[in-house]
Image (tube, rainbow, N blue to C red; front, side, top):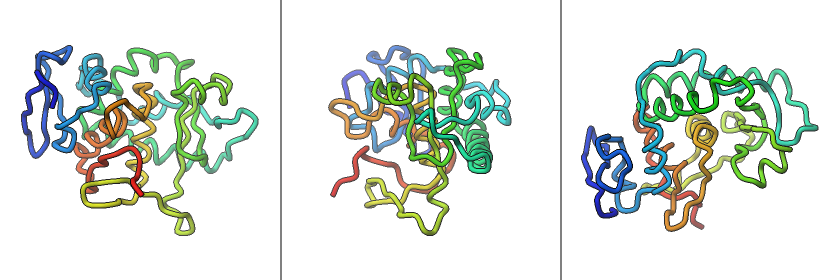
Length: 228
């Protein structure tokens, strides 16, 4: 763990704070799996997103995040039924995350204050498309500058090929909640997946912490890339 960061364990979770943290009076939850090399980009964002009060209406979070349907390719129309189904699942996950996770409340509150209060700054939902969020220059170029969060319910389809992530307990199958939260964290923070000198990156770590606070049973993801 970097110098100046002190570990505090709370209900099998660890909180980090110290002189190297921009808000060293704050104590934010973390996980033991992150302690040897926490994401510095995540810690930097912690210094911005500090308000964990439940001050937004949980049932309205999907409305605050999503402005309507829209895919990564502006010329492709999103199916209405797929959009409605995906948005309904997203709304439920957002509501659960906001009521159960202080970390998620911090990210949501900060994003709302910074941009989501403005309807024009909300995201299009690419329902049924491959998971992704337009947070890189390349993504924004391909979407013609449109803010798109692409989500799907493929893991509920018995005919789809399951995808896995790396954990200390071996490969684990992705589920809808983990996949949705990962992309939502991208949208709320504008952070990218990869980080120099860190195998997980800020989005994976935030997702791990949020899921732990939600009582999610699956083990934390320990790397962004799945080893062969």
